[in-house]
Length: 78
Image (cartoon, rainbow, N blue to C red; front, side):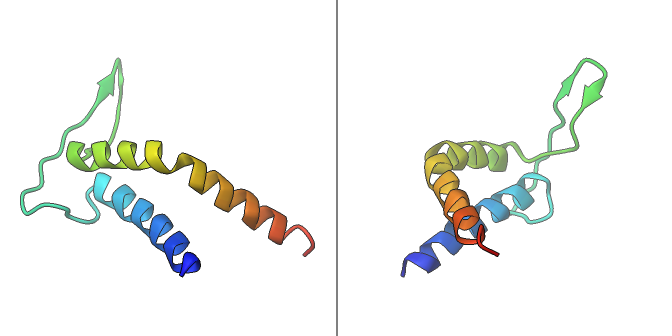
């Protein structure tokens, strides 16, 4: 069960990342905005997906770091 939970957590992050950059539509209507700071601007992003991605990252940072460290420790002997 826990292996599926780890995979689901990672896939949800990938899904939100793809939705942020308009590769996958989360809602029926796609509204894109570009954020620019001086001469540098971002590609068009969906702000709702970006907000969900930020919330996801805040809530799951500890779990994702633990999973990464476990992966590194497991593959260290290879």
